[in-house]
Amino acid sequence: MSNLTDQPKALDDEDLDLNYTREIRKSLITDMTKSGMPTETKDRMTLLVALSDIDKAAISKKKIKSDEGISNKNLVAVETIAHIFNTKNVREIPPSEIIGEIKEVSEVIDVSINEGELSQNSENMNFDAFMSKMQKN
Image (cartoon, rainbow, N blue to C red):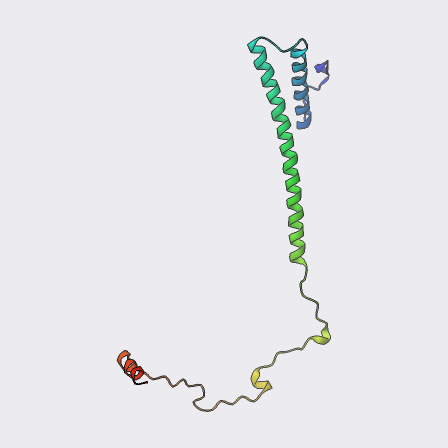
């Protein structure tokens, strides 16, 4: 990229901005190293900062792609779980097999309770009476 003035003055797209600054850094690095590595400390620091910025931008792009991949996998998992929960797990019962109203037990069989049948015959006693009764047995 020999002529940087070809770039628009105001860029609306972030990707264009990133590409533009990356190309400027690459041009700067190429210019600084065309006759070998710089020998001045200030030039070396400038070169290292430019290289570091390129590395950070590349790593950020990889992280974004990785996050998008994870997001896509999560979306597939959510859709699968939703499908499982929305699927009926029981078979449909045809109308011919529906019994209808459930009847009370007393309507089906004759229930008659004799006097004392439901009584538990529990004695009302205190601890001492209970212990003496248990010792007799």
